[in-house]
Image (cartoon, rainbow, N blue to C red; front, side):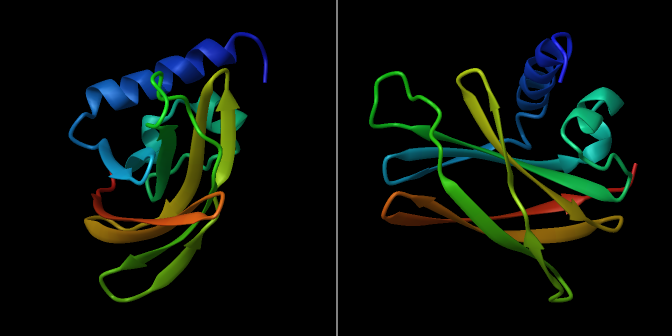
Length: 145
């Protein structure tokens, strides 16, 4: 990744979190604040998608999760082990393969998911922090743009 793409990454995730406030959620589990969202991959610029090997398609979604340690005053990003599954309303199950992305002090966990227009995907994610295991469950309806 070249020098000029890093500011784009911070800008991208900042814009996504700021402009899609209704799409961004947070759940407290134990000593963790888990921020999560699922969006269509077309929200990414072609450069960002290429830098992270993300397929930018009308039928491809991106799950973005960050985990912060709320036991510390500055709530720093936390490295965890993440795995999960996605299920649609027809009961079809797909495994999620998370990619850890570190940008400075920020840590993101990204996974891709295929979807159809107006399809609701139910996410069931395991977050392992040392010896503690936490569950994150949420649903997202996707639209083809």
